[in-house]
Length: 424
Image (cartoon, rainbow, N blue to C red; front, side, top):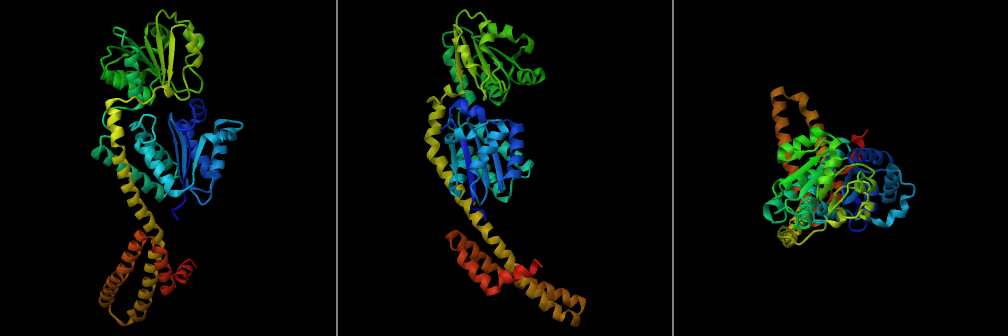
């Protein structure tokens, strides 16, 4: 019943940035894609996760729908022949492997910057979309809540979340290294997506004094500027601010590059100007690097450097994996118990039917007060009778021997017949 959890994954492990940005989904697309999957494949517990490093679909189904999912992804993105990219996808059809993969992704073990804290929130967001679209069943609800609890344990019991080795912090470290020889460097952050906003918060806590931000929606920029003590540049004055800036960090969310070679070539670069593109799809045209004095770094170049925080995280990985193993064991116990819950319910119904039939035989001969006493006594007896089989079933689950006991109980109490009669 709960042993068919699967995953289809496209991530930085196998796919370069240009392929990832081609297939990436924004929030609206994720929500729409959930509905598409609900319509076209026979699956439950559907989760669609899309970040700058990965686009993944998790689902529960008896059949392998990975090819259909990839095709539907191609249709939703307007990609004519998505099968040409099939080799970039990883298909996970083993239940235990898919569960472990989602745990590893949610904890940040699979992140480009190990332990990236953003991924936990992104998984929560994906789960919310799934719940909103009624694509999450009992299995997914339990799995995700187990993952969130595991994340709390990781925070409390390890150094895996210590420091700030996220993508946004790695961007800050890159800015620091690029401007090491520049006195009071001027930094401009354009676009305030999640990573861009995080970069601003890191800049607030850094030694950089001259940081400006700009966003198409000025009100959004003003809120962040007030939070971080930064200066807002009106979007219409962006080109002037770009001319002054030493570093331009872009987190602009749009399908086509915002910063083009033509735009950048008009900036009259006299020394060096560094562009750091944190967007997927890319917001800075790769050709800008052909403009003299301009250097471009995209999200793939912001690799995990061996900072102290990152080193502590790497040292914590075995402990994190141990916590995940314990959580999965607990989750599997629940899953197995869910497998026997229909049998437990059938057994309760069978015994209740016997009780009701016997009660009916004597009710006419007793007073209302006596009937109440008999009802209470027989209910209490039934609860005590059923307690031991239920405990034995749950124990058998943990030993992986539940099927034998289910067969015995089904035969003893003729549960299949009871169930059939209950449905008529």
